[in-house]
Length: 270
Image (cartoon, rainbow, N blue to C red; front, top):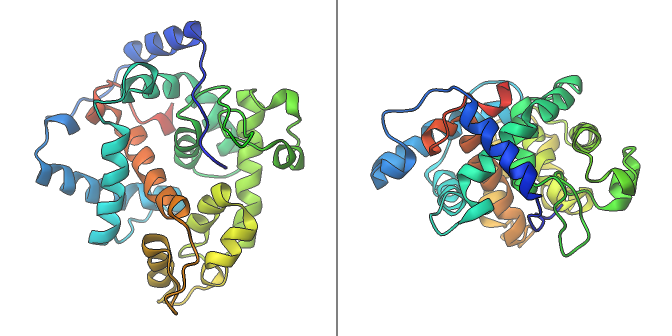
């Protein structure tokens, strides 16, 4: 599913902002903005190790290669850039996320999925815009195409309903996990498939994502970071390559909002 065009009513934006300002939460000694370049790089590696385990669902930290860290930082720096103004600024994104987090968390918790995954998906797909619309016709916070939504009980009139779309997104992710059952990278492959679709994901890394051998993770990340398979054939386009690093970047922001200027606890725990 492609990220949509942000479209959030001004009243909802005001409510979300007020909620964000009211939420108590820890503030780090330095915000990301105040960090030096080397400090930012170290922060990305440390946080990516943790959120990777959260997104995968086992809570165990993952290995973060220098190449993956650089890809995540590119996405993170773009997400928090000062060039983003108004409703596209990271503080506004987090305000919308705080307002929506309890509904998203409840839906993913009910589906026995990590709440951090639901939060990261909503931020990556729409930046928490309730009724985002993409050029391809995807709608809502979780950017469902109408036909895909129908598969998971989401009719066209409900695409902008946060509770129903979050429930459908969790069901969709569980169906994708069933296609890619490898314990090492299967859940992360399912997260990319949410964006690329099942057929494209199968063609790109389907066999890898069903394996549990020691080399599966190495093979998977090679495809994600280069777009190339073991034979150096291009199997994943630029958007697919960027999606998982962006998902990690969104999770980092959502799990440590204090580092980005918003005094709140992790959105996945709201």
